[in-house]
Length: 138
Image 1 (cartoon, rainbow, N blue to C red):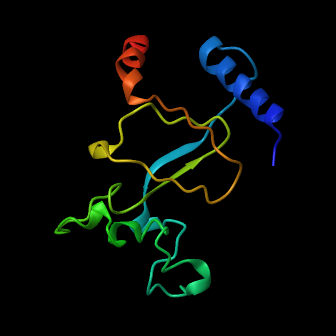
Image 2: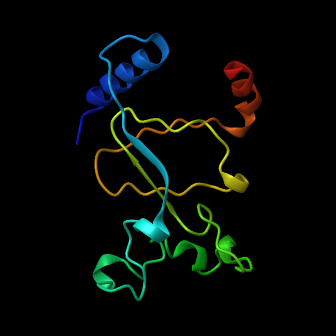
């Protein structure tokens, strides 16, 4: 794991590139909203070939199981599954990849799991500063 100073340097390099157009030029690869029904989510599903108790197929925090977990808000009538709401999406990014500031779909909370690699950095704006942030962005 990297030290705090390593993360500080990485963050400084990122913001130098984004805000000041300085530093090393970097090509960044990123994939968003990958359809997990087609490509998989990184989590085994219950009943899936190879699924067992050791790979968390039945665990309630497995992102495939969250919508059906006891007391989950996602247990609304499921005539249609909604990709990105009760079917997880997969995102693949490398160092310096960025996802735009946004409200989550239907203003729901976001749940993320990092399968592999270094920790990611999150920037969040509290609701009480939302209007101030939107003015700054405009």
